[in-house]
Length: 195
Length: 158
Image: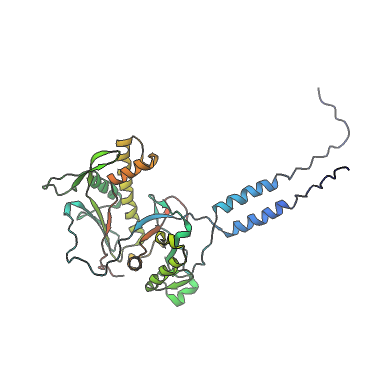
């Protein structure tokens, strides 16, 4: 018996089907990739456990104030937003345990796997905004501070591993993160400017 | 040394459309992969997100809940005024409803993943910080501590 050859399936309509699907996805698509600045909020405490809050030495704090007119004050001096990154970086890199020095934060000696015993800054960046501050400015300031941290991370990465932070492996990244922990504190906003 | 043409008119061969489905499928897959379905209809004006350079990408879209803060749409301004308001899911709500919203969003997730729920704040850049501060306070009370300030990479349009 001769084999019957199967008739070829007509694939002309394949394109139509595919087009239909394509158009559906085109219509239903929004291509926004969600990017942003990630933060973890401090947990809510109903009543403060201790009466006076934990004391942080004045020189360990890098205080950034933003008022209702979006003006910036850093360490009690008015400053232009463009200079913030440099000032913040300066604060994060320099450190000493000299009590007479009032500018740069203290450090703690820690042993980190892969780096040995190193000096880790005790510096904390504190941001305080007004209720009248604009969201745009607030994000800009947050962005500048994260940028300062990232630049310091990169500098340390090159110093210890001769590579920028992004190219390090996971363990190395962990070590650098321990070396320069991102400490950003946000105080309760004041309501001077009103809503 | 010209070639001698034989015969009269030459008929152009039909263009083969056999590869058309392949091309379309390629496009289709691209859009399927890059698609996120439109989540909810906006009752507020599309927020003009602030811009930044040091942004991180949000992982795991299924564990993200959106909170919109912007002016109500023109039609709804008669009801809600023109000050920025908060949209949770499909309705405009008061700040005090955020606790409940967080709870509902948590319950909709797999119990193992509940701790990883991230709140994505899509806030218009002209908003004042007062309302954001209130939202943050409510989120802290609801113990939803992972927060993402949605922003666009600097240089991007919109």
